[in-house]
Image (tube, rainbow, N blue to C red):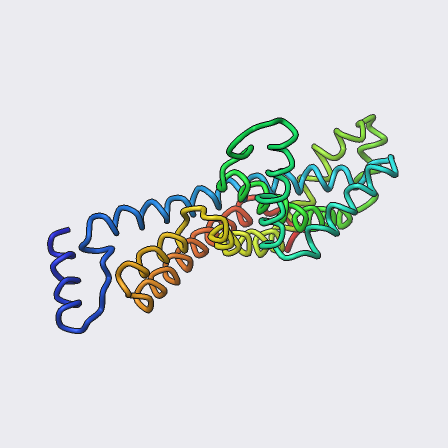
Length: 245
């Protein structure tokens, strides 16, 4: 580590390139904490949005008209408004309303908690439509065969429809989850200490905007690259001939 720090100190002195995260312990510590916040924010939002998508696709097939209409309204709201506006809506409007309702000072959730909720619902709306499209791609004869064996509606969804559907929709799901990881940068707007927010603090202190912007760019390339690699491995592992080819 000493050699790495010495190299970047030389780089600063010889060429004026200030990458303080490599030789300043404080900047390095807070930058790594920011990257870690981005990683677990992305991880939680990915899992939550997938769960919302699975539940939403199930509810879209409900025999109850009002349930289907609620789902249509949810999808329309989150697909047709910018994620930053949604984030502000939850953080300022919903949190303020709930705090007043339950007489809680300091807010119901932290900025991190509201970022998880807003981003999960945002990506979940797209995931719902992705899973719905996958379900519609399952042959009707397959479902009728399960019905003839006495499967309930939920059992058909759990054991027949959904396992085939998510194989079909994995490429589209992959694209949406990649977009979700990139969209976590909007959490910067409500002071979630993720990579971009911390980088902004560092370049404000050190006046090294070009250097830190390139570092942020590289970090997101690596994060998205790992996610894409994992999704492709998963896609190959669960591939069924005739589905999702």
